[in-house]
Amino acid sequence: MKLIKYVNLLRAVRKLSGSDSHLGGLGDHLRSDSAYNRVLKTIRSTPNTKFRSSLNKLVFDRSELTSGSSLILHSLKSNGIVIIENFLGEQELQNLDVAINEIHTITSEVTAGTAEVLLGESVVALQTTKHKRFSGYNEMARLGEPVITLRGGRDKGMLDLFNVNLLPISNRDAFVSLLSMLTSEELLKLIEQYNPALTAVNLNLYLNNGITETRGPHFDDLNATIKGFVYLRDVENLESGPFCYAPGSNNISYLHAGSMALNPAFASLATDCNTIAPEALLPCFGKKGTLILSDQTGIHFGFPQSLTGSRVAAVMRYALK
Image (cartoon, rainbow, N blue to C red; front, side):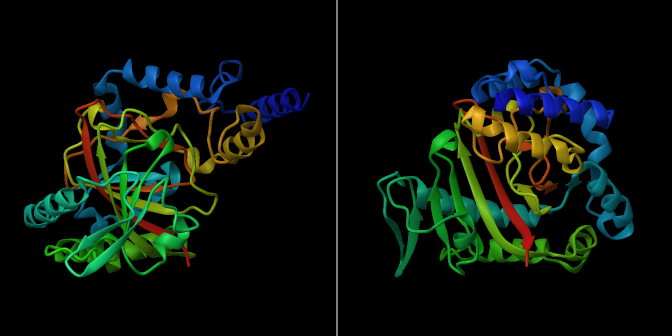
């Protein structure tokens, strides 16, 4: 009876809203895995040219951060996402390549049973399914030291390096410089105009190689937290595992309320969104050096890679102070 009540409630809200472009057929979503597979099937069957056409309205050049920041702010508020091309120059990318290669060497032997990594005289803690030292994301983000996490669950195998700018490697300066760029006056002004309650918190590094299953569409929180994803390798096809986002979903509160009400019936996580219309999700392709600013209240997910797919991205999180 509760499920019927929630379904009828969500349908009523959708009808009253006058817009259902972000909602999928609820009858098809009695299981979260079927909703996830429907999203993947829809995206895979859509021509890349259609996606790229939709992306154009979200794309800006780095030079517009200063000269056209009001346009970027308007797009961010309306769509929940903007894409800044050429955010990093060739020299910054070369320096980061050297640092990433060093990190790849360090993390190549990390498994779920690894407890810590020794870098010279420094010990870096690991958070894995077998070694859970920290209570959760926020503790690691605000720890003030690096943590290497090996994810389990649907993102099994993905490496997420917290506070990568503090990792004791010989080429750390490349990430220190990147942190400086992501906390520049122009960017922080844009973030403040979007949500004055946000501040720069942590810089992470995502290493995805052959991650063929990922968490489905979801939202992070209801605080308008922003993440800045910087592609450090070209992500120009689905095989690479692009970040996917439903433009405008940051402003549709019934998506979140309906999802949280229905999720217990799906045996889903509280912030999963099984009712999103698959066609609303847009893969964000981009060359290395591209910055994607995303309001994480909007519905998003990482597309699963092919077995040979690879994605490297730095992720800056702007969260509540």
